[in-house]
Image 1: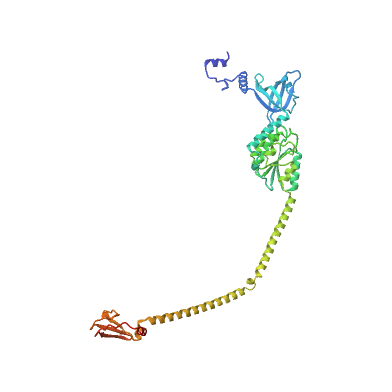
Image 2: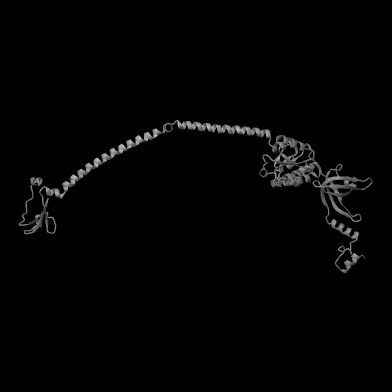
Length: 430
């Protein structure tokens, strides 16, 4: 019985491997690692065949499967029967999906994935995957026009992601500097095809997006086959471009099969040369536009000045401005005529009122008791001041007061006579 078994049977807590005095044996730890790795179970892997080794007379084939996006690889072990079951000839660089499970070879301390089935991914299936990804990203709104950022009019610094010493790099730099010699470039060289292209381009986009002076980023490649352009339809790259704060231009240069980068980018250029023309203004054209704009401004200002002169001449030719005193003289004459009309109206009104006053005064005088007394009449009043209007109010011996025009006389009634009614002639005489 081993010491491990004894410890297990005694019920003591295992302390092996925790102290240098009680280490694990190699076979024990190898067994534990093998058991732990075996828990993963069978999985499907997608990758690219980086290396294929089939030894003569051996029933085992060895494959190095490389990640399609990053620089990672795994060893694959399979039987030659499994390898021969793959439709078509499996070669290095082929895209495959492998059904396998992890195995740890305890005696050698090595790890590999044991392949049970290998399927070679054809171009049709790759395009189908890209189409499914395109539909998913479109549904998320990553292709929407309203989310695309506007490019700066005159970027002082342009970020360029392209292959080292490539024709695309030359086209962009030459055309941009011909159009605007002062433009600066921050260039990042990456792989533009193969398994590492998507990873390197994604990392370059993040780097340039964080650059403080880069105002626009161009991803350039001079076209290629559908397989060559697969990295530019990588989902990680597409989501990185969509999340970037800096405007990004896609200049892959391939018309028939458009990579998904063209849909996510803020601007799609047909070629690297077209990208340079789209993001960098032509200095000669801009100088011509400035000159034309100056001419238009000069003409507009001259027209406004001419219109101002014409208006001034029109205003100064009017009588009111040609002879300003005429307005004062004319208004003075109007004022004099108005004053004369007012004077005549006032004189006429006073004359009319004076005549009316004389007429009323004459009527008042005529109706006044004093005027009646002046004609020889007298007013009889009793001692209490009551005016006597009838002989019925008088009695013999009664004292009366007679008021005449220039004084008053005291009277005594001797006798009262009732007179007959006056005749018509007497009434008229009275």
